Image (tube, rainbow, N blue to C red; front, side):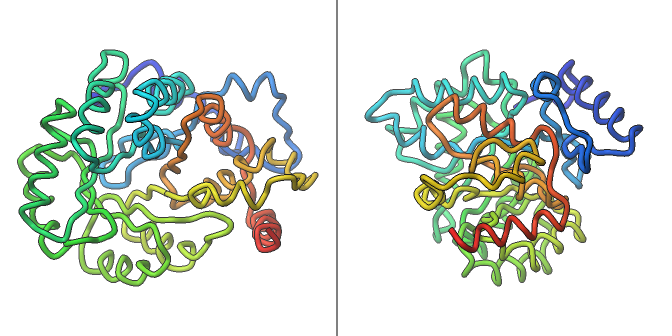
Length: 318
């Protein structure tokens, strides 16, 4: 678990964020005609947004670790080490994972316990089962293999077994085994259930699929999260990779340069991050260069509503 005491990185991020406020523009979105030279853009720290329940700041781009973790049996731990190291070097620290077989989670846990990672990562874990006692067993396995009694965030994945698990998650928060608790969905058909849960319970985090090609969450889920003070993690920014199949060979719109946007990956990420309800977007990759590219989407200008409308129009044609 990472300490909540301010670090030098946090101080610099807060100070530069204050400078952006003093200038009347957000650090992550120097909009209008105010261009950001590439040299200065590269020197910016990755912006952070507060968790509403506590004010703890999280960098706005993180890692959804399924792809590099699932590569462990064939490729070893090298890919996941490389992308986490790159994430931290670029100013990120949110790493999301899910329960995996022990033969995969054991070596991944060894990675997470390396000195360069252990105290820097904000680690999000999940339980994923309809059965109450299996959920407890999954939590105990995660604690044992990751070498942590306390998880930064424990989530009920896809709302499976929520009627059993939510009470247990509240108990783990009370006992100090979870700093934060939340729920996840990754498909539009689950949004109605998620909304109903958000109206009757108080998860500190909701974790939902959202992108210019899957914008449904911005209709009800994201406004409700903002109104009720829930942090939001976003999954599927690239639709599990199908986004890149659709954009392959297509040139970016010329006006994307107005957003300091260089790639289709950044096009999706900037759309997502422009929504003020979003706390952090989780990107999946086994390539450290792609991880660095994803983090850069959090720098420079973000689209206003008129630009977001243009982006949705482009996405509808892909």
